[in-house]
Image (cartoon, rainbow, N blue to C red; front, side, top):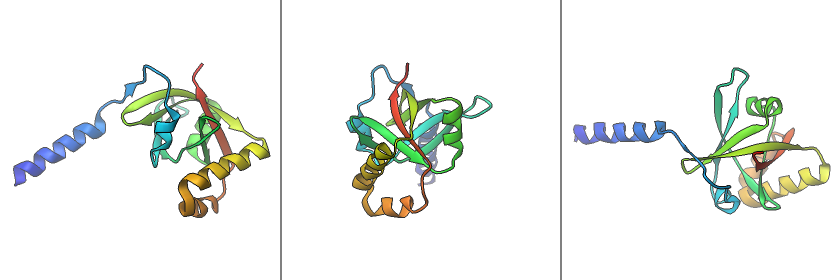
Length: 137
């Protein structure tokens, strides 16, 4: 029994540390939107990758994200190039900050539609940064 537990732990650690593959094609936003959460990989000021689990919604055929004051938002302000990681694959993208109030309202509505009552709890904390995720140049 102990041997099985050790093997299971080793397998779990190996899977958790396996390097993600870089996508060979563009992201399928519908498939990404089916996930409850995804990982966003940004670059911190020292150049090291920062991986953050985030919620993602889809609006007008592309992924949208938002946050309050966060390190990853600061990272994207300094360098909008990022990767969206889902199911072990990294998709290179570029974050475009949204400031138009009508678009911000649509992004909020997309999150409310996807996440329901959980979204109401999170949105009470407030968001200052709204972004569209576009293909990397």
